[in-house]
Amino acid sequence: MRRRDFITLLGGGAAAWPLWARAQQPAMPVIGLLGSESLELWTTRMRAFHGGLKEAGLIEGQNVAIEYRWAEGHNERLPELAADLVRRRVTVIAAPGSTPAAVAAKAATSTIPIIFWVGSDPIELGLVASLNRPGGNLTGVTTLNVGLVAKRVELLHEVVPGISSVALLVNPTSPVLTKISIGDAQAAARSLGLELHVVNASTEPDLDAVFGNLMQLPAGGLVIGTDAFFSSRLEQLAALSIRYAVPAVYHFREFVAAGVYTGRILKGEKPADLPVQQVTKVELIINLKTATALGLELPMSLRMRADELIE
Image (cartoon, rainbow, N blue to C red; front, side, top):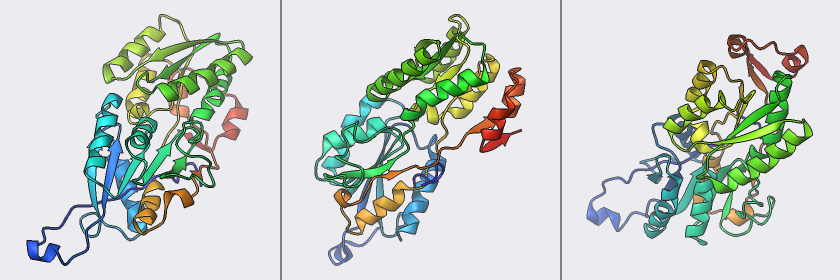
């Protein structure tokens, strides 16, 4: 699977059948969609998710329904939202693009099938027993974004070779991802002789404060950690990077694959038998326009390695 071929979900809205007809019609399957953010922030992802459902022959409102539960950026709400979906006896739970949502869904039920899309190792997270034979009631997609945090530190050092310290931005309400990201970043920073500053943000006001504090540390650049809160606000983070003249490295995520798996489960397949899909290609995208605005002279060797140059 390519880096950009990610997640596509399901759709549904129950038709208004007369009472006598409902007794004769088969029950419409219901997908419970559990998200860390909001529909407004995930519009593009949901469009891709519905595209994946369509590939499986499922169209919201026609032959499948969807119950949406959004945490609105508050991960502490996810356990109750997941429990609510379980109480409503949905057919399958989809938790795309959010490790906290996948963990909350797993804790809420051991019987309802769950489809996840996470940026870290689902075995290490305790979601599945193995990638090829997940076992249990979970399967999905992993991009191993967290494992690339160390590589992002190395790239930042290559882009700004004279720096002596870097900062890592993490979301403290995602403790599992935060712990893994910090450990990987610390190891990479030590190997390069860099000091690592860990900065936290879990709300939009926090982001402005973080960039203001970077000027006081000081930090030669910023590595943005893997988290749904950050990936839903990449434009804001990019604007802050330019405003405060802070070189930043971050991951970019698009949804294109989980909806297909959701559809397959609704058609009778079991999560335990569906291997976890892995992204096998990671692309390096460099924004030359931003680099110029920050006064950075990028090495030609780095430009040659890039899959895409934004000018």
